[in-house]
Length: 406
Image 1 (tube, rainbow, N blue to C red):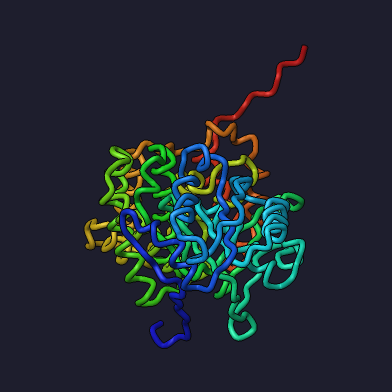
Image 2 (cartoon, helix red, strand yellow):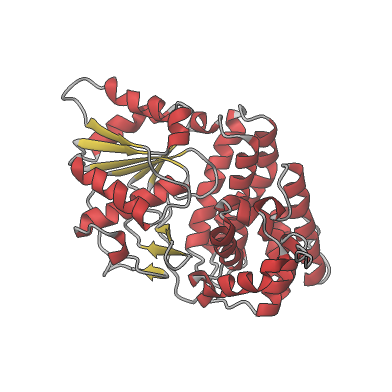
């Protein structure tokens, strides 16, 4: 309802454009930074992206800007608490006073957690995120005065502007996280030049991650006019531009629009909060089978929509509007056409519609039911076991026969 209390925050200053990375040292100077550490991963180091950003600091006259005092590239996909703690130790060892995240969601989420731990004087992020999702709001959550810039190299997570960080808890085999309005970066630099080397399949999967954010925001009972405006436009941009960047990774215009769509989608997602059934499934399957988060969302999105009709039919008119399908007839028909359009996009960009390549079979059906129920995201929108089983039967591979008795 329009009169129900809601909050919407856009704290991060966004700099967009081809070549906009050249502004990074001067942006840090304006933030008062002296000693910057660049955090990334080994894949981006090998691809030359880390060097492209690091060498910008060499062009700054000595004494005229901040110093790059370290480069840390040991951040892993789907980082766990130990990964965060190692990055935190490096930041302290280099006496960093500013943080630069260059990468996808794993890098940006790790740096947010490092920022919070530095601010609080922690040595173990588990002190802040022991399990589940920790939600901190203003005024209890206060400003964190550590200069912080994020440079996304994928158009998917939107972590460069989101107030959340997701960290795996290996002991509990769940995704844990924190929502905090001031762990967001001070600035985000959206430079499409840094995304052109992303392979087609990863481009497609991360694009579907952004699409999932937008759709989950659109159907949330907590959606507002603010979140709907970003969600609807993000969906349209993704549908139009994702096939273009998958077909031609050098299409800078489409890459730029995908980055902006990803940013819009996550802002909608975070401020129409916590009714996220697709993410509930994606977290569970990702933890069980080591499936990248974007790929998990990409496979699950249309299947979950089909199997939770009550949630999605209630907002079928908005889905039809966003996906430009017929906005006539009964909600069930609108939802069916919206799902078919998503499946067509999934096929067009070369994404699978199941997890068989991850050795996931229906032998594991009971295990997936327990995992989905255990994921913290499911607490506010519990999914019945029969629905979890129905989804599993569609996305898991065939039964593996038991070995014959000898």
